[in-house]
Length: 254
Image (cartoon, rainbow, N blue to C red; front, side, top):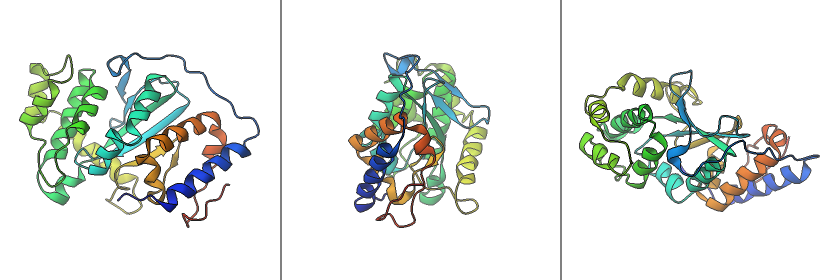
């Protein structure tokens, strides 16, 4: 569930205080920049579920938990912080990690999330995850519709250069990565506060600090999210020591 308003304003004020309180902020220089998403490195992590996109040595890591059918994930990816995140990735300043959930199929009925996650994994095998991920959210069906069918997923793949061959088509139609889909959902559920229930989507963990739901408004404000990434890059130690208050109207620093 999305939250914002007063909490987002308070969060921004707290972050400003965090940076001003830093003794010796430092800016880590990126080691490599990229001309487009097609040139950005991407790989599957050793855990078998985390998909990493970007410079492996980037000083900031944004770990996102998303469900392809989630409308709030679509808002983040298209008009919120997502475009700012992609720009930072291409500048070599940030890398993104994705854990893909599919719980909305069970909640709403259908299999669109599972099919989309399978297709995203197939795109990763072709080195086209980042581009296809962007295309899917730009063309997300209504949450109540089970619109990510195999035919639709293949139709959208045409928008990604180099994707859509026979190997990819077979993987999409035959659910080649069904085991990955199940393992990824379990990985999502494992980080929730209650058993067998994930933290909600989208959830962002930046340099090991999870942004609570009460402060998630920052994810949907492009400028605020961009500023947040810059602040963390300048003062990573202060950010990693940040403690979120229980009352979102009363931010505090550790």
